[in-house]
Length: 174
Image (cartoon, rainbow, N blue to C red; front, side, top):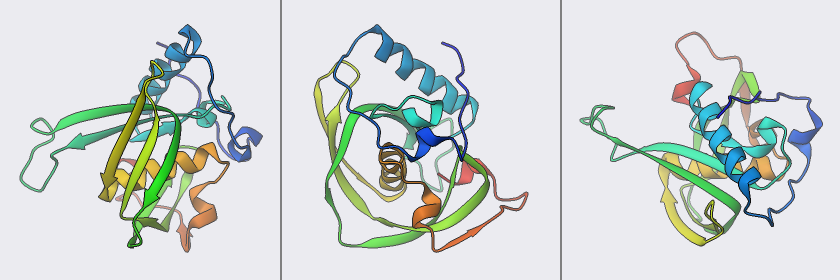
């Protein structure tokens, strides 16, 4: 599973609406595996196929379940989601501001308002339907990655954008 190159702005693929996936073949499985390895290597918490130059509706997300102030990273379980053709079917009215960054815009972070919770549907890597209810930081990650599939960058939604200082690492932001 090779690490793929993460494309950055102004690469045109990042501004295009990605096409729906129809074939759940070996090529798709390889793409998903490569995306997971690329996301981990970056390091990041999510990655969309357009970020590796592939205009298809595929995202991967990795997040610690059960993470809280008293849980060590070793105790928290990492969960990885690979979602094909994801759609937000319901979003909370409540929104919250948060700081986001992006592997495709490595020199900037920004304050972005996002829905607090979501219901998402899509297909898993084998083409089977899945539905998720997510909230908090995980909901932010999914919104960020689904935006990539529609050619939307976090800077398009940000109310404030800046260059992060040394103490603000990419691991602390989407």
